Length: 393
Image 1: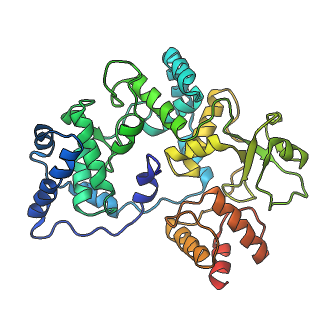
Image 2 (image 1 turned 60 degrees about the horizontal axis):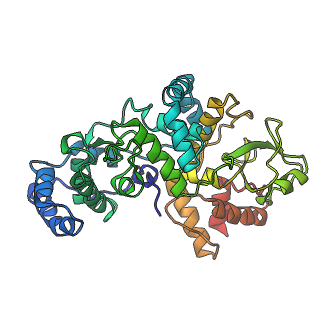
Image 3 (image 1 turned 135 degrees about the vertical axis):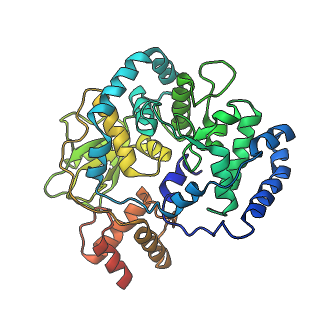
């Protein structure tokens, strides 16, 4: 299943977009919109809703410019954390945690997701609802769908948006979001809204634009449906013994303790459970033992920098340190390099779950195997040196 914000990880990269503004652009756009009707009708969309949604819209030139001018922004994770995990974010989180304490308690009870994680995501996505995007979602999705950007993805999202209008969760004029169709304070794309948004306030509508209980409940439901396990920590920053074998990546908490791995905050690991050892910027930077709940956070946004910011924010809201170790100035491989790495590994017979640049924990284990082969420290973190060795293999 695709992440709610798969588009924000891979769509924002510099894909080639077919020119829209040819001589027959207007005709092409009208033809595209008209051709949607049979599929919209199959989804239960009425003619009145369909006509009202598309009436008078024209392609949004700014949206197409954004697709062309949004190269993947690659910078050290430490820089990302410094810019996102701010004193203002924490202060806002504490205010809203107090203001919405009863709702958060109810959401946590129903879905089992820690309220601090929910608050952190809300804050990172839209500044606790202060800005969720001012783009006309229907127009943006129609523009991208007609341009054949990401094949059928945006066409399907447009149809899902029409379903939302048909179900009267939001009115046409208030369906606002990002240029790529992420909507409301929770920043759900339309298909994720249909699957995971909830009416937590009980007013008969799923309103992630204006209804905070619906926003918080929807975030909780999304994480629970993507594997969040109640009572399980997201993970811990850790320190390693001098003689640690970096080939080891998966073990129970008890096994990590036996291997001399310690929590950076001096606490003890849980008595039961498993964790994956993870070095987001290589062994020279902070190390973490993370659980399946970290992977659930990452399903919200397929980015380790984002997921670690959510986790660090939640820690701060609990009165803990975000992270202790210093982050190195390590520039990660860009998306093009990661895709090339994945395709090379796949061609050489190594299991690869995707070839769109997403580095998951399975891939990091395969990278470790190759790092041993290349005489590199097997920390599972790919570098330009690793890629160069792979190209020569």
